[in-house]
Amino acid sequence: MGMKYMIKEFALAALMLSILDLAHAQKQPAEISIGDCYSADKFGNIQAAIDAAGANGCVSISAGYKGGESYSNPHNISVIDHRSRGFGVWSVVQASRPVKDSDGKVIPLGNDVVLRAMGAADARIAVKPAITTSSTKVDSPGIARISVGTTENFYSIATMAVDRWRANQEFIAGATSGCPTSPPAGHFCIQDSTHIVANFQKAHTAIPYNLDNWGAIFFDSWAWVFTSGDDLKNVLSIVETRSGPHRGFTLYAYPDGSSSKALLNFDPSDSSPRYYGTPEVGIIFYGSNGGPGSCGPIRFRNNPTDDKDLALVDTCTGRIQPGSGNFVDLGTPPNGSLYYCSDCVIASRCVGGGTGAIAKRVNGVWICN
Image (tube, rainbow, N blue to C red; front, side, top):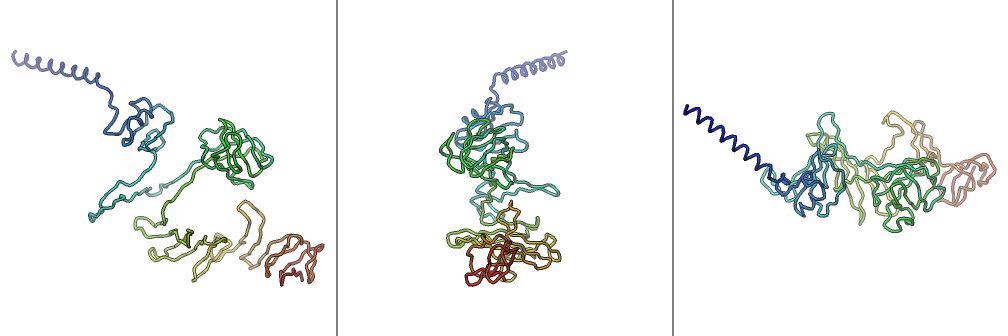
């Protein structure tokens, strides 16, 4: 009887302790931080958590957080957002620092940072634009107020592309003055949720047309190196070069994975930026993506959306087709210029009114014989 009594007493005491612990726990406030990292869920809104974190803390937003409010981050502290399809951050992913290498030497600015996808998986860096459409015609350049589907997700400081990829595409910068009705030429203002005021430089009469508000991807380094994999043998690199106060670049290939061969250089040092090859091979153009043994035309055009050839070289036959126009278009270019004059007369001196001739500029005179 004594043993059974003791067991009952022990069980009763344990039960009482459990009840007391539960009551105590219910009186405690919910945990709102781990160290200096604050949970937005426990504050009820993200801004309150950021304010509590101050200048040196951090904030975590759980995947189950129900709010969708915007917030400011005046101290630019770390914010980890698990609501995104992936891993959202404000605003920098960077190396931990300082660290030591395998030999124990201090690397003050931190370790390497590697973004790696294995096997057939892709690694992507993307900037997703905000896109809307408008059916308001812009009949001529100048200030116009247009109706759009929505300005949601548009940012008034970022560049806006109008009719992108079309012949009359233009890029309009966000205005810092003149808003909301009089932005400077080539700038725009967001007037309200469905209207944009822009000082257009081109007409846009084919409706509807797209408006894209987008950012950019920056590779902030003096060299970009592409390797063949874990062996880190270089395949291709783009290296910054300097010519006086200007920055150019050189494109290098590594045929054997180690020694480099310069393929293409860009020199922006004077008023006519130039591309040039290497002394060994110069620059070789193929008129087909089939490489050596295949052929096709190499076309010279004014811009990517223009379908008029200014000149053409047929790599199948070696035929050169110069630019073409009428007699009135010949002008006074340097000696040695060659042109096809579609209405010239075949004669020692070029004149109009004919059925076409090759015009050659010699000693300041157009010759069509």
